[in-house]
Length: 102
Image (tube, helix red, strand yellow):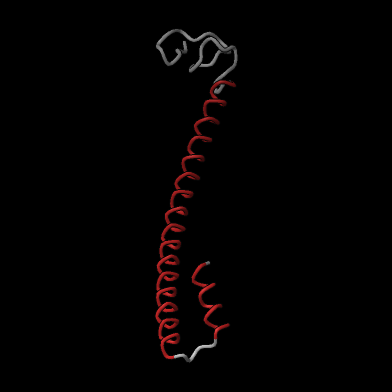
């Protein structure tokens, strides 16, 4: 005699995990539960990959922001020096100022 997972006698043609279902194991409910578990595992994997990618992009963004700040500082110094020395044309000085404002 066969038994279900609860220790009760298993009726012929019924699932041992879902004894109320008149299908042999694995029944449609077993298959759906397995599909749900697989979908959850896949979503967790995709979430982990997404979180890793976000962290990588945040690091890149921070590096680029720091580079832009260093470039702006360098342009500021060069612009101030050229304005003091009078060695820069007004249009070049204007272009540099517009670059700093963007």
